[in-house]
Amino acid sequence: MDLSRRVLANQQFFDPALREFLDEFYADPVTRPVSLQDQPELIEDIKDAYLAATAEHLSATYGLDLPAWVADHGRPLRRAFFAGGLESVKAILTVESPAAFRRRLLFVGKDALDRPRRLSDPPPRKPALAHTLR
Image 1 (cartoon, helix red, strand yellow):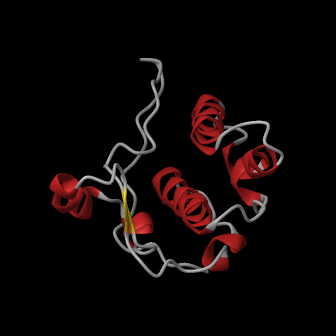
Image 2 (cartoon, rainbow, N blue to C red):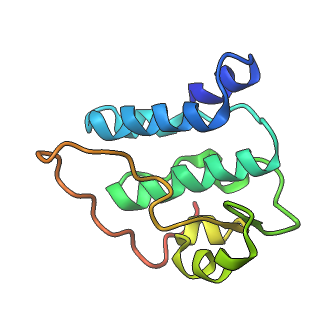
């Protein structure tokens, strides 16, 4: 994932780099499998976990092979991370978070990886409940 190199080189902040990656991923079904295969550089614990969770979730959602790097990318989080940081949304995020994120103690909204799409784009399939890491 080239986005980690851009973030580490201070060329782009993490959030816009991730959104750009997602836009490219959703726009071109042919390049989807290849776009997840390269192991990203380590950035920092939460971002590393987020990238691994993103790759795992997208692989499950789009029926792609799980990249080998996903299983051991970065250090496991010791404390749960809740997007937005508001105490009032923790329960909602705990329920809504996709399994790939919850497994890494990342709690995000169910639409954390959503991007605007064209009406002609086919909807993604729902990921399997138990997507095993290889």
